[in-house]
Image (cartoon, rainbow over all chains, first blue to last red; front, side):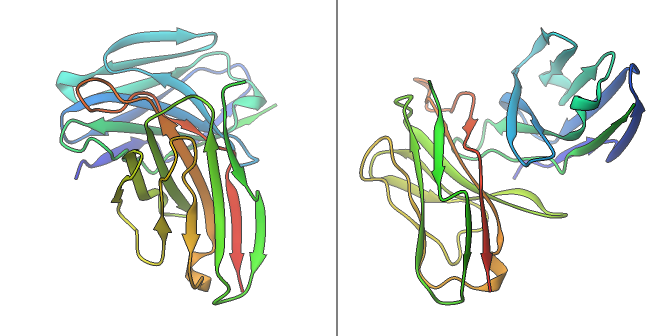
Length: 110
Length: 116
């Protein structure tokens, strides 16, 4: 199956800082999703992005499917951005399976 | 409101006592799936369903059963729960594209299960 690697595994940011999270994947993908898991365990959809760039407020994501990676940008971070960020590619070889990366744990300090 | 609901949200039970975690979606999605999340192991797929009466195993199906008799519901059944099934469980749903691949997945709020 598809291998997914996220980096860095942990990130500590001061409020207001910018950061980039990376997701590398081993196979061709139809699509890719980014999620934020808040401290209460809820999984929140951030982006559904097969290729190109999307922006939503202070967050943006870029997927370069031909090079098998995706990036999530957090700008002007806030304490509410704390949590775990997961990427989940949809492999072209596996219609029904979504493979999650191990996640990046983000802590934003005041 | 478009949503995926799960019940119960929290459950403490004992080894061997059969239980069912329900999942329901109101978005007319063909695809539904169950995942479990464990510390250090991330989210792993248990079972998925591409449509009514069509189910298939994910990466960790042992000890679980599912059924898809109606489009909106996809219950997860633990016939004889064991402590290693203590986990956070998520249900998800998605539209299917004409090509057969799945669209954006939407997740339920999670069910925290403890098996003593």
